[in-house]
Image (cartoon, rainbow, N blue to C red; front, side, top):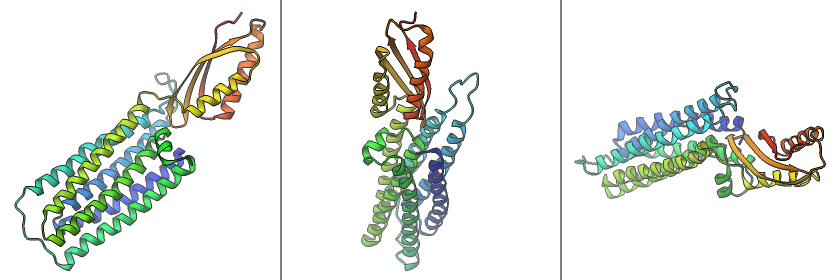
Length: 306
């Protein structure tokens, strides 16, 4: 997903989460639901995470300088990693704490009045609708750039903000469904334990999401190669040059979602002179960039220049 579309998805997510967080906190205040409080904290954290992702995108576009000659593209991965920490420590941690606290607390009689039920169900159903709409916006943009299967697209994508928004929104929808089931069981059995259990399940869900995001972001943060298809395209281009006796040691690394560094060793035929090499190398670079504009830094080394 291009940065522009990532930002649209993030803005949609922030707008949805701000409104939903307010509704959840108000509902939690009037109903005393721990699951609703956990969900309110979840939405508030998601809002903060959206702002951090926007900041990361902005920082990643800072021009190269003496200290960072290849630019600041990898900052987007750093801030995505920070987001995963926020989800784990604040989202998952607080939800688990609230759930465990209410599980062993002395419970007051449940207010089964229509007013309380309307608060809970109204907020949860409305939140599912808005979170679902936000997820659809993020998913639509992601699929536009990644038309292949979902699992392979998610594993191969280097767009950390897009992945973060999709995973966060999907977790939000699932968390809301868990809260809805928990509150329904609480009212049906007149037992607040189900509300506490749903809060614990939401905490476990957010912890799992955070660990998954941290794992996915880590591989990008420490430097990951381009996908096999892109590397094969480079091989095919170099193999088309009759001036080469061979080539190898092709190495790529993502410096950002749309910024790839490429290095390759080539072995020119012995009858070529230095003056013949410059236009050939320039043509190689042009063909590589034409095939994949994301390759912005190319280093071609010859081992047999005369």
